[in-house]
Length: 298
Image (cartoon, rainbow, N blue to C red; front, side, top):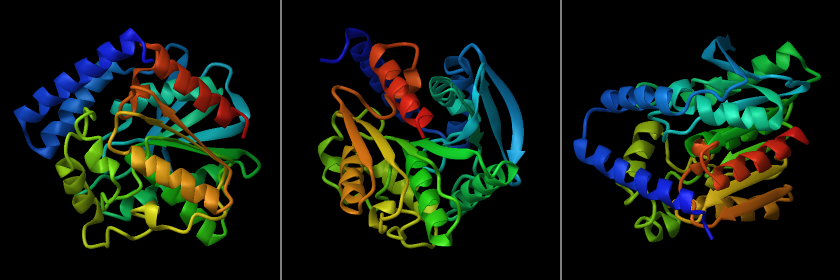
């Protein structure tokens, strides 16, 4: 049963997002508001050093936990439906995961749609990954991402596989968005419970802005339609109360069928990317701890 504290946060998030939606505003206003509130609400955890940097010509931040190991490094790809999200919105979550994994983490500030539609985000992730590999070819690179960032991490792994380039050591995916066509049953059936996506309109709009002139079923845009053989071992965490539950379930089944080592854990009573509240309630901490242990073992 979900903890009382997690239930409190669930209803607060649902109420605040409803109020935010009623306010409206342009995409630029939404981005600015989320960056501003996130800097206050989700800072890097104590003990994690933050350093602005570039990798492969792409901006981002190094998040360096005290005592981090040197044999592996984490590349984190943030969520935000490919149209919002930044280092400001995800510094806290990526920092907690880096701390749990005991790894330095590069949080990539990849280009957003509609200014930079697909495949810009994939190109940025690929460039950052290759730059990391060039810095130290012997070092293991592990990937993590939430929501759209989870789908982007999977797309990056597919691109690396198809190019015959060095594969990541592991992937940790938090509520990954893999089907931009929104064809899975939970996109509708979980809407009443999902604080972020009470209907498909937001995701549908974001998918069209991201895809631009590309087909929504293009495998690097919607990895749900990709061949999933030859990918690194993967851990997927998803909440019971989210529209993207079906994306995670279908992904796990397809990875398993393709012979990839995969674990799927569904958290009772949890919602989309609840891990952003790491440090505030037990279920967020438990997920981040498990994801970190998985990445640390790569």
